[in-house]
Length: 174
Image 1: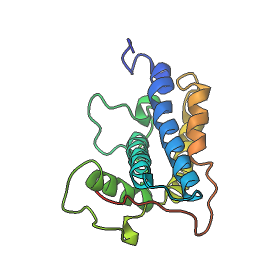
Image 2 (image 1 turned 180 degrees about the vertical axis):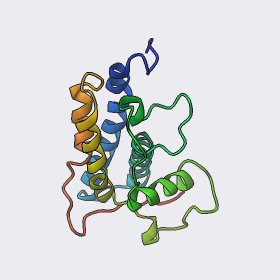
Image 3 (image 1 turned 45 degrees about the vertical axis):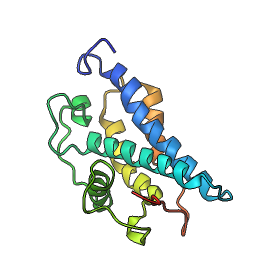
């Protein structure tokens, strides 16, 4: 991309923000599809790849909408909406952010061993929790700064159907 993100917000959203949303939704949906299929010998590895992709891309989106201490070159919702203020981070996303940082982005003593229930990620609940902030962003942003395909990709995050007792995911190792 030849222009800096601040001089071409629409191009940045088209390429990078849409990518984060599409990668999260695609990996999440593939995990849900796998949950309904017979187990294969290589399923643990493939599922871990999808799980880690979900965690990484959702973490990036959480940081976009709820920046903690953005660096000078970070692009956040505030880059698109100058009045975008501090929003209260929902508890589910607070816990998710901490876990993503501790269990995926760094090798720490807080990684969970084995497969206890607290190692699960419920991407359905996390997706639904993102609906409000995504709607807020879409309702406030100048649509000249965010192309329709990016808006569509963001909306797909919250369009998940929750099923009581539906699948939650945890890595089999790591």
